[in-house]
Length: 227
Image (cartoon, rainbow, N blue to C red):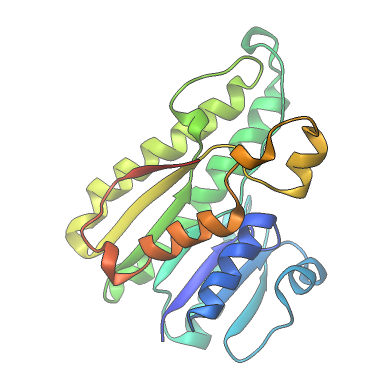
């Protein structure tokens, strides 16, 4: 049975991804910082669902969660790096170190720690899949969100680098580039926007599910727009 390691599982997209894989019959390892939030979002732990608490900014914490998951399910077949963050900021010339570090911690350091924890096991096994969440903003900068755009561009470039490094070893690495995701938080912050033009978490989850499937075995280093 396939085992999927999902970071940011308590968020709107993480919850949709966890639900999609659960419906497909996979084991899911749901990573978050709080068990109560994970349970509220995805349900209690079960035979096929493991709730793992870790701080993605702490490499040792993530590595411990990955080891526990591998011990329980035998191996991790796919890593879905869903965790991340967005914040409106300031013009680039006025961006503080704290603003810059926050975006890179949430969107880049979290990814690096997760792949460092999971990919070695894939190399020792029979390959695997890695799917990262970049953003439409990775393709073009926007005013007052320079740190966010830069961090998501790094996610896209890391995806390409990892793909070049790992495709010959049976590991597919790809990313998706969502536009605005239709979540309660986004609706609250942009109440007058046309929400019908936003991508739903469920639609994104379908794309991620596909990229983790055998049908996507020929896709390497792709950055797939999802709007």
